[in-house]
Amino acid sequence: MGSSCSALLKRGAVAEPSEGGAEPEEPLQEDEDVRVVIEGGGLTLLEFCVVSICSNMSKFSSFEGLPDELVQQIFLTLASKNKLRLHHLPLVSSVCDVSLASYPGVSDDWLECLGRDFASITRLDLSGCVEVTDCGIEAIRVLPSIATLRLDRCLRLGDQAMESVSTMTSITVLSVVSCSRVSDSGVGTLRGLARLTDVNLEQLSRLTDGGLRALGGLTRLTSLHVGWTKVREGICGLGGGLRGLRKLSLSALQLPDQALDCLSSHTALTHLQLRACRAPSSPSLSHLSALVRLRALDLSQCEAVSDETLASVAGLTNLEVLLLAHTHVTDAGVQRLGGLARLRRLVLDCCHVTNGGMATVSRLMALEALDLSDSAVTSSGVSTLVCLTNMTSLNLFSTGVSDAGIAHLSSLPLLRTLNLDSRLVSDAGLAHLHTLTDLTELDLFGAKVTTDGTRHLSHLTSLRSLEMCGGGVTDEAVAHLSRLVLLRSFNVSQNEGVGDEAAVTVMTRFTLLTQLNLAGTGLGDEGACAVAGRLTNLTSICISGCRVRSSSLSLLQGMPKMLYLTAEPNA
Image 1 (cartoon, rainbow, N blue to C red):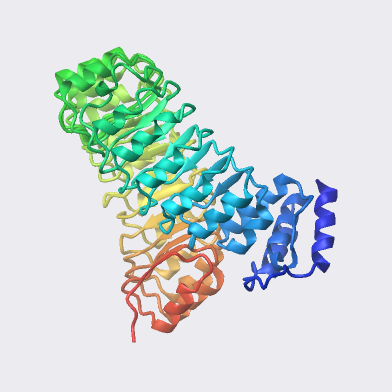
Image 2: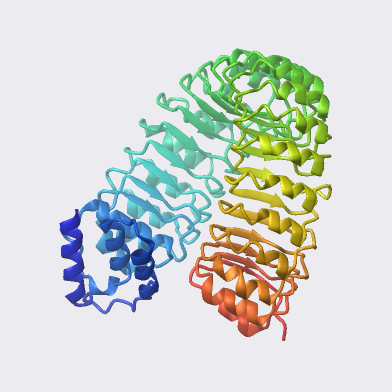
């Protein structure tokens, strides 16, 4: 590999530009990229080679003889930096994994090139490519080896596209989420794809039981998602087919009670989503007790779910994930879960639980993620959870937990994600977080954070995401965060004391940022220009209510990766 990289770099240094009048290249900020590689240390020759080639694409007319692994990395690097262009595709035609999800400008022309030159593709992701039409899918139907095809949110695709897909007999995984033009007729054409193991048809507004029945003969199917459609019978209409299903989503369907009765015979199920199902009665949910292999169960937003339901769930001792958000579960129901020794994630968001249920939760020793948001749990309840030392994620948004409760969190050394969005949390509580040095996400959106509080956060150098929008953060407070250089997402909106000084002297150090929210702050043109010049990885910025003129907005809009800019320009 090393000799191949070296040879190509030497060849590329003297190669002539591609023939045929290719469109001008946009440089990959060549000097900066190469400097990062050299100064960063510890990078392989492959990584250095990829950066160098991507920075000099116009010098190459062919990658013939280059290892496929290197060509794949070149493709991924160009795509990640939004520098991949249509005329580059022939150079990278040996790749097997083509991910173009939401990539700007992808159209039928791109797919025609893929169909013509990319015979090695095994995985193709076109999710969010809204310019692709049925004709584009017809152009790739000739690809012989595609195993995974994702077309989510390709809004122009209809039944004709599904007919083209139906001829691609190598496909095992197919996802067409939110392709609203696809109807029963299009889904019916998929009946011949005998190798299918995983199909996602969620949010197909024209899909009914008739379309679903056509899939009953796909005996290899192990994963099926039909939530948010017009399916009414669930899997009852399949005539006893699909007994090998392991994963099933029926979210937001208007299911009759007999649909859950049918489910009880699918004992191979390990993952079941019934989120927001609107019809099943509480007694019908008792059929869940037969699904003893279940490892993940989502009953969120099901109106019929109550403490009685959890009596049936209590015997599902293989459960690792249980989602009960926005249900009628109370402490009495939680007490029935004490035997779920393998439970790793429990969501009780907006449930009627109090400190009384925490005694049972504290016995779930395998628990890694717990969501108590919008509940009546207080600091006293949190104090009982200190024995859950495997916890990596804890959500206490809008609970009764105050600074006193946060003091107990130091006993949870593995915490990575923590939500303390509450007006009961202040600087005094943040003093107890200094030992949680592995935190990567911290939400203090509504907490009363000031300069003293951010001083306590200065040691949390592993943070990737931080939100503080309580109004008390200033430039001085932000200055304490200068060491948090791994941040990818930073939200200090609604803090009028944050202005250009913080943007120029501190935020510009956060060069890995992809999302920045400064809405309602004192940001002006100086700060906006500094952000535009240094934070080149930004894909989203919100500066609504800031004193930023149109000229500065133009600089932000022109940033290399910018996708979403929210602002109201000043004159």
